[in-house]
Length: 70
Image (cartoon, rainbow, N blue to C red; front, side, top):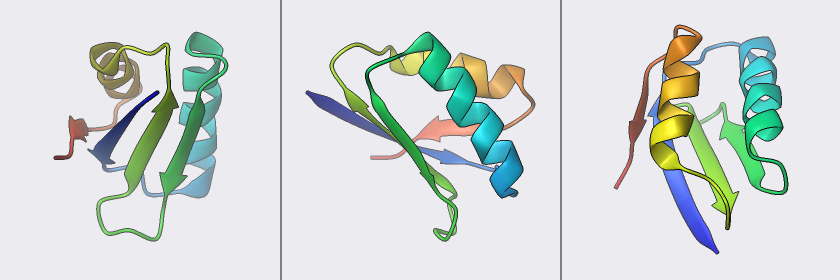
C-alpha cells in the first residue's frame, strides 16, 4: 500500500468531484479524496496500483495545478 499527497488549486467541490471521478476511472480500487478545507486543496491517493506522474498529468490536463507534497 502506498500513499501519495498532492497540492492542487481546485477550488470548488464540483471541480473536485469531476477530478475524483476521472481518477477513479483510471485507477479503480484506490482510495482517492480531496481535503477542500486545507489551504493546499490536498488530493490524497491511497492504494497499490497507481502512477503518481499519471495522476499529475490527468489533473493538469483538466486545467489544474498538481504537485507532490513531501
